[in-house]
Image (cartoon, rainbow, N blue to C red; front, side, top):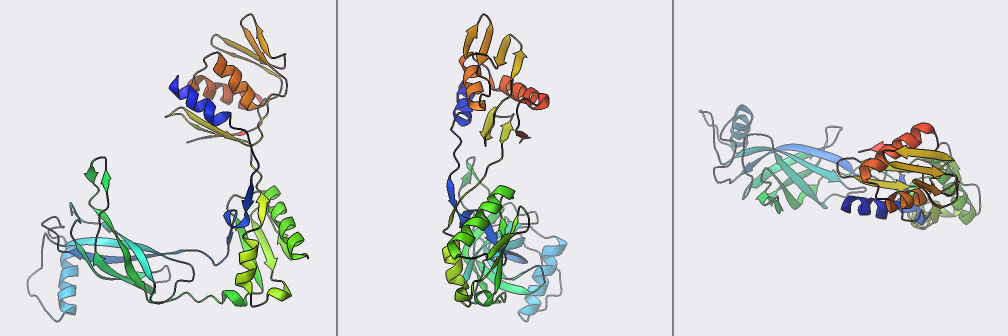
Length: 329
């Protein structure tokens, strides 16, 4: 019964078309993070490193050669671990800025706790080095009572060494992409922008893409223009959709979901949509053109379980009496 209560709370929340800031609805072309990756070594481990291995041993040998040493025999140590270092280069990242980095073991190391990352170049997808990372690791908190010790972070552990050139303030046009593609929302955004800027500067080419010509009085003031645009408020249109998690019995419904006239029989349950609200013998009735919220209220009143609801929703969708997308996660 506890699961059913959770289900109803999620489903009976009234659908609202809240006004959202444009900055929460779209991404602007060129304003994004860029992933960086590098290979490095973590030293100073208390016997919890790889303890050898071709990659780690070769890396150690090359490191010593770089430092002016030339070991004859193979170098092996349980205090060293081979790792992959990842980071995200922020939009408009500038030389000298710091970034957080994540370090993950790729060998047999059982723990990176207490280790120090040696200087590690971080490359972008084009093969160029954009940052260099190093420093003492923190493996974070507890996960189910134990340290997840083969992965760690270094806050501010990388320094940006190369910038991505982007003359953003000199742009004569901008392209925005909706985070959730929708023709209605795209049209509303175009209308809002044009009405506020006083001209036909924005145009939607599809449900995702909006192109904007920078108005003459905002030339070389693109930052100011974006600061204004991103605070425009637009009503985002929501698709009728039901998301179901069968493992937990959780169902979340959103959008304007209504039902056509239909009779439902499920086990001992008989319910008709299209009659007067109430109960007749063993048959429960709800009004014609009812919403999903009203249906769930009626079903909950007679003790329907989440499993029953999932089966009913699937049958309603198949029958065509309920117009909504069903998604299982």
